[in-house]
Amino acid sequence: MAYGGFSLGDLISINVCHLAGLAMQGKIDMKKQITKMSYIWLALILMSILAFGLSKLDLIRLGINKSYLITAVMLLTITKAKLITGFFMELNSASTLWRRSFNTYIVIVPVVTALAYGFA
Picture (cartoon, rainbow, N blue to C red):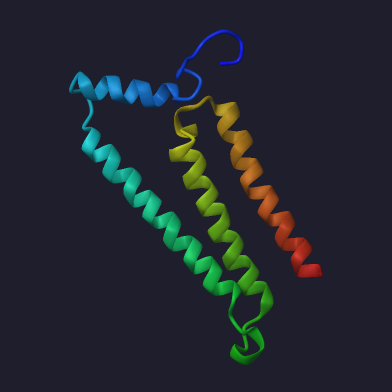
C-alpha cells in the first residue's frame, strides 16, 4: 500500500476469494463452510479452556504425575496448532512442502518445550 496503491489482494487469502467465487457459482455450499469453521473455532476455544484448567490443577493434592499433565497440555497445543494451520491458515490446500514444514514445526516446538519444562 505504501508503494503506490490500495489493494485488498494482499489482505484477503486467495483461497477465500476462490471459495467465494465457487459459492457464487453454486459449486459449494458456503453455509456448510461457515458451519465447519464455527465448529472448529468452538473446539479451539474449548481446548484452550481445558489446557488452562489442566495447568491450574494442584498436582500434589490430586496425586497426578507432572509428566502426564505436560503431555496432555502439549497434545492439546499440537492439536490446536494443526487446526489453525490446516483450516484458518488454509495449509490443507497448500503444497506438500509447506504442509510438512508447518506440521514439523508445530510438533517439534511443543515437544522441545515439554522436555525443557519436564527437566526443570
